[in-house]
Length: 140
View 1: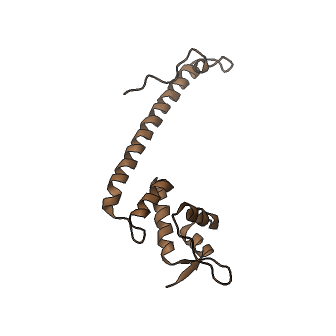
View 2 (view 1 turned 45 degrees about the horizontal axis):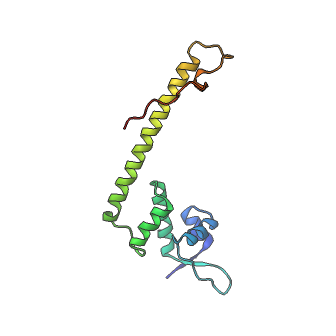
View 3 (view 1 turned 90 degrees about the vertical axis):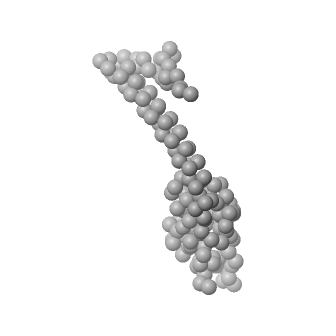
């Protein structure tokens, strides 16, 4: 079985060598043995595991969530059945964030209308006065 040095693994995964050590501390990657020369050498499977970690991060999963996924089957790919609920949950989180961002954008549009609609540049902005409520009542 071929082995890869830390620098090679980091390059293959598009990360810094310190990231590998951090992932080891988090339990995402196993700590590799050292050769007599002192070089750390990972098993070839570490490249696939690192790529899986990076792909999961790109999909918005946290390192804690990724650790849970990897714990389900540490030596193989993650099964679709294990992913479905997690993906649906992540999508629900995104929907909530999108709703919050849309609400924030609406608040900013109101500030723009209230503050910039025909007012002089030197006038105090009413949107930042103590009497102003920048956010409408939240829908529940």
